[in-house]
Image (cartoon, rainbow, N blue to C red):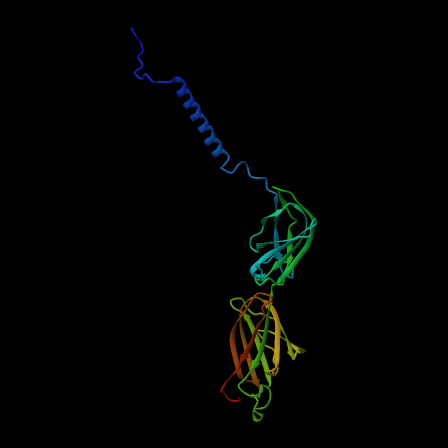
Length: 278
């Protein structure tokens, strides 16, 4: 009696073993290919390190201030490689402290500057020299503080419909004999600034704003400019041109003073008032 009957008369046990070996080899090759990422091996190690910088900004008085108040857009770095002299530039958003970026390993001298949107340098920090950057490591630079100018600049001149502001009416002038100016920060009281009065670049005097008791100064002619520095913001200016004791010419205007390095220059046209004495 037979316990096992082979119905396939052509079955070859050696062929089956060979087929199994081929299958095992294919499985091994697929596993190797997947494990190596089809790239022929691991990628080469990185030669880059990183630098990290923390910064802050103060105004002229040493008080903390903001990027917006200083008119700053970015913190710019220039790294000079001591080995080859090549310069690498990097930049961080002004509001992005601390900032981190990759740099090729090496020894660098680093210049650090605060920039406006147009690339103008607003402030600098002390250079950091012989800074060693190691591959795959972060080098933390010495924190810096920028001392920035937060003052904007306002330049105004006054004009009337007459040929001159200060000549008598009979000589085609406006007849103005005295002038008062007040300047207020919108929503925040008086701005007691001092204007420099100049003609052709030569200073002829000053005018200090006093909102509660405006100083009456001499007539301000068309070719005269009044210049002052003040914080960026929105201001209300009131100008009165007097003939004797009467306010005969006036201008009330709103001025939006931009951040530093962008002076606001404005000619204020005075309007004649039809009142007795004018």
